[in-house]
Every structure is written in structure tokens, then in C-alpha cells.
Length: 246
Image 1 (cartoon, one colour):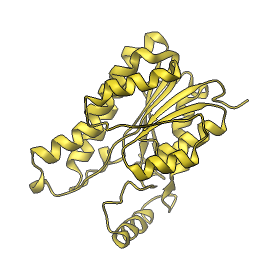
Image 2 (spheres, rainbow, N blue to C red):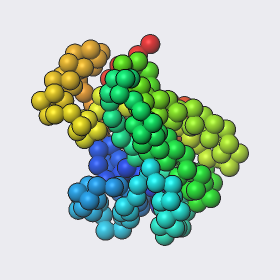
Image 3 (cartoon, rainbow, N blue to C red):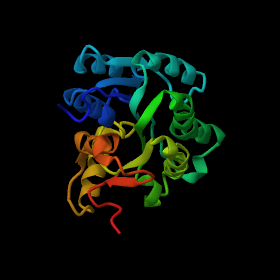
Image 4 (spheres, helix red, strand yellow):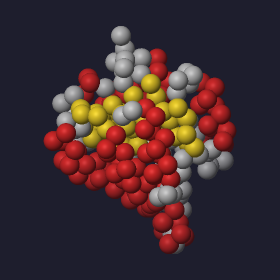
């Protein structure tokens, strides 16, 4: 019997990277999983890698009209034991290049979207369910190029604490995954050689001297989603190789 035997879990942004790694492991541990994604390529890949009973939905977290559609799709599961709000994207640039469109697009996808999704799906969360929100160490790094992205991920941390207080009386836990340098497609906006140079340089600054894997980050999210973390709520778990170590 696996940790997720008989449990139903939804992962937004679950068709690639950490989300897909988590979905595969939940299925391996006996759970039924539903994932959302937006890229046709990633949706097809998830369909190939996940078991036949997995539900795979195209959904745009930035679109408020898509929330009700997601709620209706998730009703097929008959309730959720776990919800990992993982969808989001990164765009970088100097502060001089930030305008209203730049800000709104990222804030809508990374902060407004997950909050509206949680609000819409709250009624489908079973007693003692677990919610995980994906933030980022960017919220703490003070990088001159990530002001908007860092703001969206800082918002996730604040939202999670408030939601943990709101949902606690129902026995529902809300925690935050704070990944650092993880090998996913998240930095695909960089040219491959620049990305490799960036990640290699970053690895030399880490106590563990390497970039983490999607599976390693997903493992921590799954701990928080599982009953192993039954007395953990309102917390942040960094998976960053020591990047933000204090």
C-alpha cells in the first residue's frame, strides 16, 4: 500500500518538470492523479507517461474564466485529497523594462491564478486534504532582473499562510514548496548555452555543489501532500541545495 493509495490529487502545471515528476510518483504510490498544462507538447507527453486513469486537462492559470471549467473537470474525481498549485512561468528583465503588461501577465499567471483556483476548488477539498503552493527562492535572492517574478512568488508565501489559517478548522493543511536551482524546463527562455553556463556557475555557489532534479523537488512536495506531514501547515520547505541557508 503506497502513501497515496485511494487518494486523489490535482497538480496544476503537472505536465512537465516538477509537477510531472510528482504526478508519476503519486501514481506509482497508488493514487489517482489529475494534471493541468497549457503546451500541447507537454499535454501529449503527460498522456504518454501517466497511467490510463490519469486525468489531463488543458488549462490556463492566467485566465480567470478557466477556473470554473477546471472545477467542473475536477468534479470527475469526486473530491480532492491533495492539491498542488504548481503552474507558473518566469520572465526576467531589468526594472527599466517593466511595464503594466509585463507585470499583469506574470502576476495573473503566478499569483492571481493559483489563488482563484484554490478559491474555486476549496469546496472539492475533502476533510484533512493537503494543499501545496509552489513559490521560489527568487523571493529571497534580490536579483536585479527578477523583480516581478520574485514579487509573484513572495505573494504565494503570504497567500499560503492566510489560507492555512482559513482552512485549518477543516483539517486542511496549506504549505509552500520553495524550489531553488532545479533542472526543469523553467529556464527555457534562456539560450541553451547561456542556461548551462548560468546553472554551472550557480552550482559552484551552493553547499551541495550541484543543481537539483525535478524528482528531488517533487519528493518534498509529495511529503507535504501526504499524511506523513499531517501536523505541518503554514510552513515553507526550501529545496535549494542550501542556496538560502541562514
